[in-house]
Amino acid sequence: MEERTLDKKSIIGFVLMALIMMVWLYLNRPSDAELAEQQEKQKQEQLAAEQENQVAELPVVKPTLPQVDTADSVSMAQYQSRVGRFAATAVQEGSTVLENELLRLVVDHRGGQIIEAKLKNFVDHDSVPIYLINEGNANFDIQFSTSDNRVLSTSELYFEPEVSQKDGNRILTLRAKAGPSQFLEYQYSVKPGEYLVDFVVRSQGLRDVFNTAKPVTLDWKLKGIRHDKSIRYENRYTRLTYMHDGRVSKLSDSSEEDDDEEELIQWVSYRQHFFSSILASKTAFSGAKMFSKNLVEEEDKEQKFTKEYHSIIPLELQAGELAQSMNWYFGPTDAQELKQYSELELVESIPFGWGIFGWINRYIFNPFYSWLSSFLPFGIAIIVMTIVVRLLLSPVTYKSYLSQAKMKVLKPEITEINDKYKDNAMKKQQETMKLYNKAGVSPMSGCVPALLQLPIFYALFMFFPTSFALRQKSFLWAEDLSSYDTILELPFSIPFYGDHVSLFPILASIAIFIYMNMTTGQSMQMQQQPGMPNMKFIMYLSPVMMLFFFNNYASGLSLYYFISNLITIFIMLVIKNYIIDEQKIHLQIEANKKKPKKENKFQKRMRELMEEAEAQKKQGQPQISLKGKKPNKGAKK
Image (tube, rainbow, N blue to C red; front, side, top):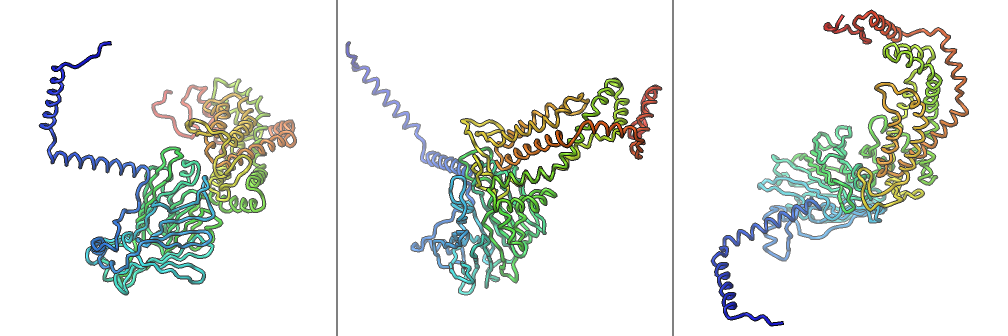
């Protein structure tokens, strides 16, 4: 192969092209001003990108404060200029630990606030200790104006710490000094064996320092740290709750953002499903503005936070000084634990349910299950409680099945009426009502018992996902009865179902299908009435809905429904085969037909209206309304 070589002309051409390019680049280079503008633009874009990522991943709630270097005179001068008279406080970096056998608190000397709250006796689904405050997810701040026109925040002030003991309580006193006998004081008192911490904010000699014409506000922010394996399920029971003027209210648990403003606030609870951070006042705050922001969009194993909370609470000066006695509660959302603080009514922060449902949970199911689980394994306690509930409701089941049996006995006659008057809906309804009246049967008698069970159904629906006693308690293949059980992890996620298969919901769905087949099978055999729901469709839809809905719910709840339906099936088989005799029911109905039955006023009025309407129809006259209303003037005669 011949070697290719460049001749002299080609080399000269390349050199000339390179020189031309270099001259062109030199003549079109950006000026110094343009370079500076480009660099500034790049910095702004980079900063914006960083802030966007920061907000998306870990919103900063604690302000970034400039460090104070005590060895640097310039740094100290800047700090003293910023805080004014509070520069009298000795600058001490660091923190102090307060703890008992249940709780560990770390209090920062700068800001005087809690920067770590750890619950010693609990871990999350990954065996990581439970932290309610950690790594900057919270900020507590009191903002005020001074007489020399400064607006200060306690988060930027240094406090001088002093630790003491009194009556077994470990006490931390922190003072931000404005002079030898002038200071703003935080005092934390941790008691043995309690999650409740006494917290006092007071001032001394600051009436001339505070600008009393401007408000003093307490600002508390916190992001809920994830503790459960399903963040969407946990987020469903993560909520801001508060007591105002003796009433409990809540912000939305599902809206993207929610806020409210109320007066006379006794406490504000930042609930994180099974754990709560609560700020309570021994004398009610005059008011508060509260905000909640949802941080969960979809199921994500990497997501760290559920909701972001924010409360702004005005503090009132008394004779120009601050004096507010409060309490912090960092602990489990457990009725057994919270009810001991009856004077603060913290137990009201537990979501027992509203109205009669909450009453049933609080005074029946919660104490009953606590008693059972005190001597039985937790799963067995659920089964025993289910058996007791179903036995107590067995009279209702009997009434329901008795109604079905009566309707079955009347089925041939109802079919005969339907065939005889198939072209006359009015006459068919009239004759059917006569038959029911003579036989002493009400078609609604089967529905009423089912309605009576709804309060029990809903109360238990609220009990199992929020019962702290079930948390991390295992039974059979379920590792945690307060969360879903898993027998198979899917390599993909099914909409509305999830990325796993739970066995208890499958068993519960099968049981409810058998139960509904027993209760609605006879209804499906009867002629489908116009306007009535398709019972066959409902029979198949209900188990499917339960399968999808409960796949991500507490396995204890699915266990309850599974056992409950099995027991109900057993009770119905006993009633059908050993208690109810259809032949005796038929004889009783026939006997009822022969007895003259006195109509009440309503039945008499309905019969007369229907007879009159039927007579008018035969005569070709306008039909009278069954409600007793006159026909429209435009009706044809």
